[in-house]
Length: 416
Ligand SMILES: *Cc1c(COP(=O)(O)O)cnc(C)c1O
Image (cartoon, rainbow, N blue to C red; front, side):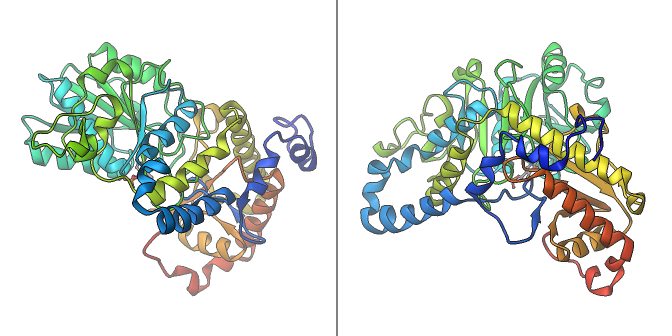
């Protein structure tokens, strides 16, 4: 056990003193396996099972269409949004859950272009999550490069290359591959100095990193429901829009749910006020109900505690790997300093895919990111320090025996 960061405490002591230890039993976890992929698909909260059953059997099955009112289905985009708000430092009335990040980014990029009439550049980083860039590329194609031009630079240059024609800077808070954490407050300040707006993608940071969108003066943000928020496969994403922009909201996918009076069925579109104007079609009630139940697991927890444990988990994992002679072939691609990384670690190896598969068989669920990254995500709600020591021990075994070289581990799957 490394002494430097853990004051000589044993793994057992770390677990015994963990203020979040009680959270683990609230989740369904696979037997004898260690889940280091909560950043890709959060684990199943037991409360979500009860909620799904009730929503399907009672609300849908018995109460039928009355449930839109009697079980407040119609409010779910907002009630879930309000549960996310405290996790991202947002006062009420600024978060709504709907659609996917990709679709929501489309809405917000259009929104920003409209607010910045004389500017046409969308600025992002080459290392950004691909869908974020694809949406920008699609928008450029749709509007023509006179009206909209996507410019990408390296993450490191983003702050320096901001020029007067940039309408909006958009970036992910935590890089999905490296786990690098960006300084939202600083980059937002630099963007605003140049008259640009910002959209932050909080997919890999919501629920594990302290975020203060209001205090940092952020314009807009999007985030993911199925990663560290544990909302289930394909859970709806969310949008944050700072109150100061609410008088100017106008997004292009104008569906009836974003109308001021959807049930008046009038011919002409008039946007609802505030966050409701970001809605488009009928909310996915089953998904939202499950997300809503998952979000209740955060009630009463402090993001500072979640972040503290997340940092301790990644630090322990890193230290144990770097102390293991058998693991020296794995090259850490995440920032060495805890304050510069999110809740995940990336290691590169030419056989990363095979190692990931062999590790899975050894009972550690991680994931692979092309071309050569073995990625581990650390969910502070479910992991024990003991799991970290155990997973590094299993990794050591896989690497020592080179069992990953067996041909069956080379088979690629469609989803990685
Ligand atoms: C997971 C993730 C997404 C997912 O986008 P969807 O459209 O919701 O599938 C987007 N951006 C980042 C940074 C992600 O990590």
